[in-house]
Image 1 (cartoon, rainbow, N blue to C red):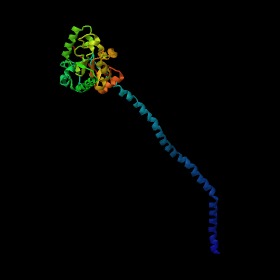
Image 2 (image 1 turned 180 degrees about the vertical axis):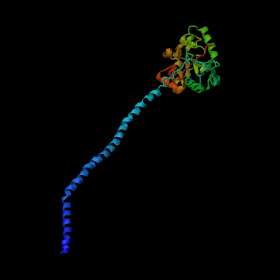
Image 3 (image 1 turned 60 degrees about the vertical axis):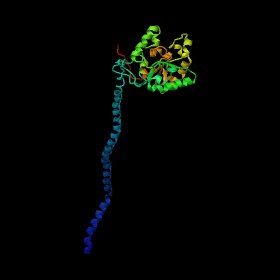
Image 4 (image 1 turned 90 degrees about the horizontal axis):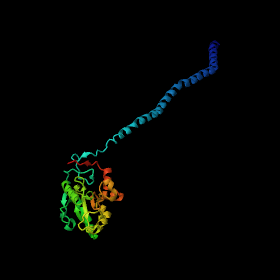
Length: 303
């Protein structure tokens, strides 16, 4: 009994305690809700922090266009050198010699120095018979000999009889030739001969052709040069075929204003097959092509 009596307070205490614990779930639940309601509040700042980094990358692309905008002026700055290389066509020939290229510009304005002599000159009588050279002491650059020989051989095979009246002329030889035509043909001198330094013949790549038909066509026995050369069999053949061998007519009838020379249907210059064919297909004069694409020519020094 005593033990039972002793245990009664303990049992009552446990019952009371259990009752209290049993009666406090709602309070405990309300306390548990408070952490859950406060947790999102404390959790929001991290969400805001994570939002700001995500907004930073989105802001970075918006900043990226500004560098491209600032780099845009740079191409315009790079393009400014383009206008700067304005060609200076007033260079004296003593400072700018021809380089033995096949496209050196020679016109009545832009010429060659009195000291210029092309390399590789050879006499034509070492390669052609007298019925082609007519005994004239004519020279040309060696690189022209092969194409010229092939062209003349094909002309002869076609029953034609071309001959070469002139080839290379030095500055002094051109001065002598010019004076001869001044005395013999003063009215046609500008058609027949250029002033010294302004003749393509000084390049050593030019041939003046003749035809045995010309005297009869013109009606003058001793005629050598005449625009009626284009009517001869040799003139017609050259006009249609010379480009196949690398030769071009320097002074076509249609290009007088561009070239500065009157029509010379007998005057052919070697420029290579590719260039001659291009000029032929484009129906463009050599001078027009040269002034558009070649380096600035020089102004010959005054004597």
